[in-house]
Image (cartoon, rainbow, N blue to C red):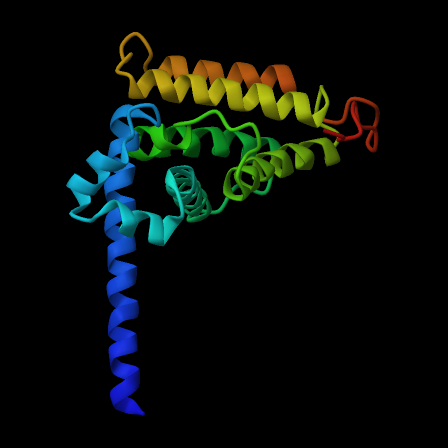
Amino acid sequence: MTAQIAPLRTRARDGETTRDVILVAAAGLLAAGGEQGFSIRELCARAGVTAPTVYHHFGDKAALVTRVIDGCFEEFDRAAAASGAPADPVEALRWGFERYVEYGTTHPSHYRILFARRQEKPSAAAAASYERLLQRVRAVADAGRLRRPVGEVAAAFWAAVHGVTSLLIAGFEPPLGPAAVALVRDAMLAQLTTDAPAHGSGGRPHDGHA
């Protein structure tokens, strides 16, 4: 029995190693040229595998690209969760803005992969990542401190932080520096949130629906 199990375990480890090698090579290609510049032929040359091996592990090119993007979203969320957010919901949004920019500028290749394709239907990992932003915005609404509906605020907040991060990664510093980034962050929070409930101690400007 032991003699039969050992080769199976070895093959399983080899399979995981091959899969990881393909994922790393695919991530490098996606970061460099996006999905349009991504070819299975170049991937095979970089990873030292054959096309049938790629298809065996991932099914097709689209599934492989999705898996790489999902892996980057999962890593992005793990990095954000590594340090706890403040208890105050508005300060938690501020903290989230800072962590987002920090991750993108520290891991520019991974960040580029997050947006390597325009997905008509976001993958599970992408949807889960955006849901965490929605939850953070809903917490502000639940505290009666949100000026606009949850969905609008989350979209505007993401647009601002993504724009800042993309410009920094592209090398637009200067003119975009720490003071300008902080001004964008604080202006967004001032426009979208309040310091206290707008309608008495229990009032809420919006009911928190997305």
